[in-house]
Length: 155
Length: 256
Image (cartoon, rainbow over all chains, first blue to last red; front, top):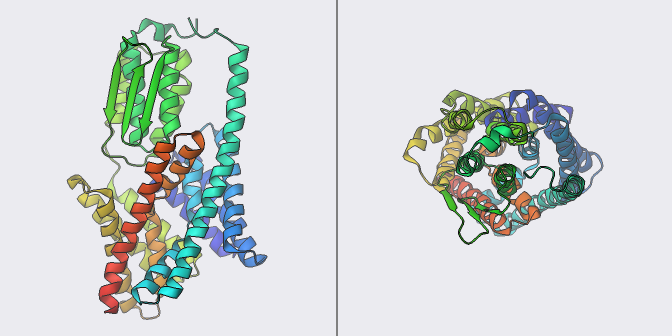
């Protein structure tokens, strides 16, 4: 498990490089991906939760950390969350589904397909939840600022 | 007065700066609300309070709520992913309220970012190969699968970079990537018989999965930009479909 977390860390850094992330946030970005993947793999393999729940929790923790890192390093949130989300993407069930379809095993293939789409939905729900909560904070801050210097900036 | 340099520019000049910044943001794969927010914020600093921006993944329209106002429109045909550029423009937009450069200098800065030459092939090739190889290990692979996934993804990325001057549609690009990486993984399985096809292929598809489109689409939904959200999520589904078709073609020929 430790080896896979370590390699998830390296893979996230490689993704950061692929997407041309600024060099000084490569390591924090890798940390985001590694933590998200660690939560996922611990819940799934260590505690035996379902794949969907593990993905959901992993995404939530990952998204929260990337919101915090975005505040700390003064970078857009996507710099952390896009490479970080990738270790969780359900590539394996997707591949298996396609492979079973090619072998005319539609029953098993459909099962894998549903699993892949449920995993993707769980990730989506995690991102949706955290980004909407983050927007709440942002909007309240903006409203406070607008109330404070009403017409001050405008010439 | 904090923004005297900006007040010294004309409104058209500020608008041009703002729309260029928005152009760079959208072309490097920023979310819709970030583009709209940047343009509106820059224009507000110059006292243009009635500016309205409409942005989808393929167009930016900047116009005025006043009937006699202006309209600027920019059509985006091709988008990449460059988080570094997004972060640079983001910094520029946040420091715009005490801006120290005049119009020409600002446009030069932006033009330099807009026309920045693409990075050398080997950076993207090696990083996608490394990412794929690490995923093969994450799935439980050994050294041979590490090497196999590395070459599968790296060769596919290299071919994509070579054909990108011909501007293929992103769907066919991804399909081609699926074909190539699946074929390379098959060859590696033949060379080293114990190799698991599954781990190599799943590792190798990771750099080509549309994670950016998916994540940005969902963030667009939550920001209320439903049209952009729909566009990006369906783009992601289309690209996943393309990848699956490409791999299925190779596997189908193989199994037949």
